Amino acid sequence: MDSLKLNLVQKAAFSLIQQDLQYIYTVIKYIKPHKSNYIPSMLPYLGVVIDGAEDWVKAINNSSKCKLQIPLFKESESVFYEQIRNSIKMWNQDYDKIYKLLKNAYHKSDEYFGSVCNPIAKAVHLYDIYGMDTINGAICGNTILCQYYSPFFSYTGNNGEYIKSMTEIGGQYIRLFNSISEYTVNNDFKLDVQDYGGFVKSPVGNRFSDKFVLVSIICQINFLLYGVEQWIKEEIPTKLRFGYILYFYLINVVEQINTKLGITLKIDTKWKSDRFRNAMAHYKLGIVLKEDELINSDVMFGLTRKLLGEDYLIVKKSIYKELKGLAKQIGEYLELPKKMVYLQ
Image (tube, rainbow, N blue to C red):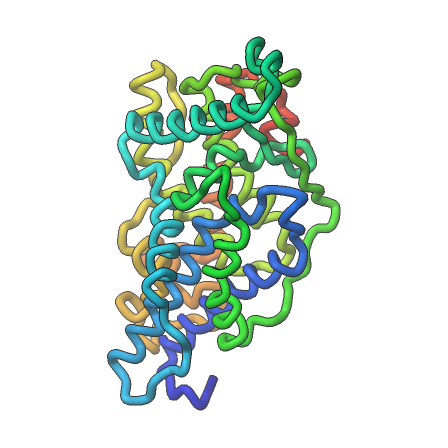
């Protein structure tokens, strides 16, 4: 990296990208695509990392005579990564729009599986509508969310091959940022999928409702809590980066949910900061930190200290505490078994 002639702040940003790419490499090494929906569930975060890295490379090359020899997106890749990155902003929309988007995806799934089952099963509605992913029994994703994350998704198309072709540039970034080593993972965590809608009734009812939207929030929280934060044993900036983005956007929708349903879900807005989200989400350390403000012993090089007034670990623990607390509140409202909502 020294040959790239980056300044100290740029080197810190390079390190953040490198560690995020190492998370993706770890997923590639350990996750078997045919056994769970982990990879479709991580698409929004894949978009954040690869699209953010490409933006950072462009910014460096536009401001320096010494160009980074790292490829930029082709037009098709640019469209793909913009689509999956934007899906991370799901909860930044009005609740009614979110409801309609998920309802549309749910009905598409219902129509497709109803069309391929036998006539008797269709007549009595005994066919599965969607699958719910779990980690050691706690829900952490569902196929309706995965469809939302993938605007290009087709029930009759080869989605896997398309994603594979679009993510080849991600493999190049992993190599060029020297992220070819995996983190240590928690091998006690087991991924599984349970289909719902047929003989096994959905825990929130087989008809789409606000309950399905709420259970999808639990899925997203638990994907990060158990599929990233507790799955990877090392302390890495990726954990706060992903968790903070979800926390930031959920704040937008919680009050709308409370108003519509007449409930009192709570999430502490203490840590909400547009400046922190922008700097962290786009690797733009230079707009916040000067070289003499870098803290090399800190996981995020002093970014949380500068903008939020606390060290990385305090902020990260607080964010995940808020997310877990919100999931528990929703689980209680939906009267779900505790083992579905959080690990015992």
